[in-house]
Amino acid sequence: NNNFLNHLPTELYALETVEILYADNNLLNGTLSSGIGNMKSLVDFQIGRNQLRGSLPAELGDLPNLRIFAAQRNLFYSSLPKTLGNNERLVKIDLRDNKIEGTIPSSLGMSR
Image (cartoon, rainbow, N blue to C red; front, top):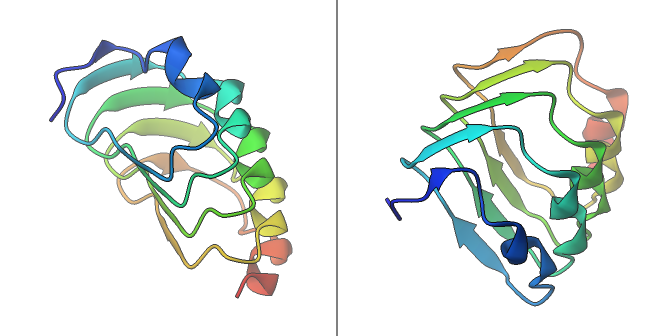
């Protein structure tokens, strides 16, 4: 609980060496910016229990070191971006209690 209000600060997306970002249980709303794709060192990204909505950005697949992505209990909808499967290091995705639809991209099965 960082007391972030409304959205993740845009300056955060310029921090290319950040490896862990926990923003769980804040009052975040709006969408997740495609700027997340700039955070190439990100290993563990947790934004659960907020009010984020919209589609998950395809740029999540541009994070070569991402191992954990937890965005449970938000308002995300649409389908999972196929680009998520681009990351071979991804071992955990937690999207429960969202409104994600469609099938799981087959490329996710290629992750190790």
